[in-house]
Amino acid sequence: MSFPWAKRYTPRHPVMRWIDARLPLPRFVFSVTGGGYPVPRNLNYFWNFGVLNGAALAIQIITGIVLAMHYGNSADHAFESVERIMRDVNSGWLIRYVHMNGASLFFVSVYIHMFRGLYFGSYKAPREMAWLLGLVILLLLMATAFMGYVLPWGQMSFWGAQVITGLFGAIPAVGEPIRVWLVGGYAPDAATLNRFFSLHYLLPFVIAGVAILHVWAIHIPGSSNPTGVEVKASQDTIPFHPYYTAKDGFSLAVALTLFSTVVFFYPNAFGHPDNYIPANPLSTPAHIVPEWYFWPFYAILRAFTSDFILPAKLWGVMAMFASIFLLFFLPWIDRSPVRSGHYRPLFRKFYWFGLIPCILVLGWCGGAPAEPVYVIASQLATIYYFAHFLIILPIIASIEKTLPLPSSITASVLGDAGP
Image 1 (cartoon, rainbow, N blue to C red):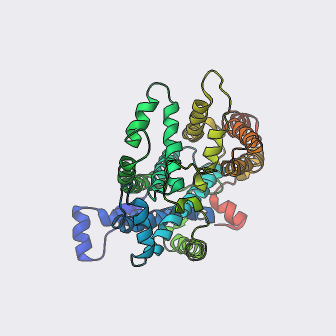
Image 2: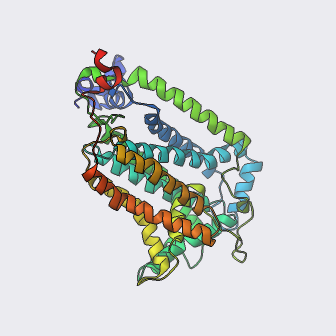
Image 3: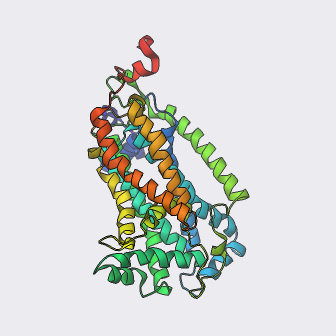
């Protein structure tokens, strides 16, 4: 898809024209944010979560900067500084609750955005780079969230850091030196807080940079759409502004209303009460559990309980990281020429009745105690997760009889009565 309108754009204001002639930033902003950018006319509300991702990132950066002004990144003062923010800083309680629950908002939006991409084949050519950059954002987001969870220095913060950083020790030869380097010693302490605070402050700006590349990578081939059919004529598209800016604005208003409800009425619904107890290296909580958005990966980690050639802990670590890195190869694993799940009946069944329940079971088991029933369920779900991508998808791509695709986006939306 070419964008001749971007070349024709000329700012109206003399100052903006002067800037645009020397640094085409106004032209770039125009091309990225709206005016005239042609978008498929059939996008549904699942395509609005990209804007919500950007809003969540902005919320986290702004509130994080304010919190950093009052946070004490030392083992002796971290917990007390968070309490002081909650009690003594003007509107500190609100800023902290927005930041704390903003992480959940960000992960909800990112996960829905990803599942939409999985169902509608947004990872297929020519949009592989946008998919890969999206996965990089996910990895950076997970690292940022983990380090941020450590900063309050409560019981769950300390023991979460102890458990997660201890995973690196399972790597032969280099694992323990990496763990010591990451933690700054042999157990989480002041050096750990210094490292994690610095990285937690830095990484959101890295995420913002990768997000710009992600949007750029989408703009080159143009947005995907629910049919998976590429744009064939101008009547297949409408300008991004005002049609999708209005739609995005409505979705954003609904999402922020729900988010505000959580912040004001259920601010600790996604937290753990043990994290309001100061960190104590001599007292291990009865049930160490990460934040909810890590539960599926934590379940995969705990699914390996027996040594086989390699230690069970190492198998768990490798499987946990492989569950994410596997998605980087998805554009080449799924070779079906049809993108959208709407026209892939067999793929649709395995997606809704296989993959989605599998992820839900992993999430349920990851937040549950390490008891036999949950371990067995997580083992079965882990087996299916990897089988879905490595075995089922390639087989489906080779044997599936897909439904007829519409001749164009316009035909899909308006039928034969379209222009």
